Length: 121
Image 1 (spheres, rainbow, N blue to C red):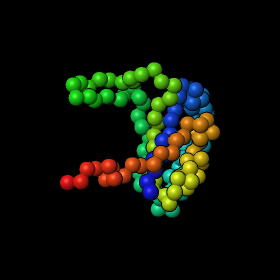
Image 2: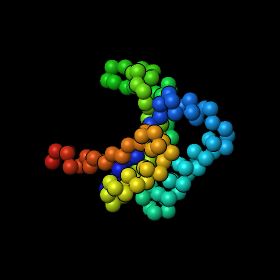
Image 3: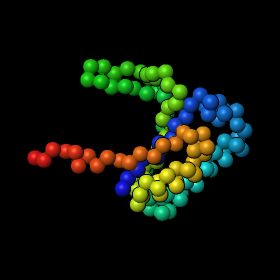
């Protein structure tokens, strides 16, 4: 089954990140690298990416495209890991190793099998 591990950021974590020494920042990235390498080694990693700042976002509707950010929110999506694990507990195990999990900023969500919901032809 596929799961997405969503990593969020907020103003507090952004400030903390900006106030870190280079060595502390490197240690944070090492945490992500360790999770990514572990997932790749186990064959459970599908893809992982960090996302650009929310201010670079574009929202698309059928009538217009607008620049972001869009709403006053405390948190924004900072990155994700798409994994294929035997169950959600395994995905949670990986998610718990991410540095942001300390702040409660990591979410695990099952991927919907869209073919289950598609009408038959």
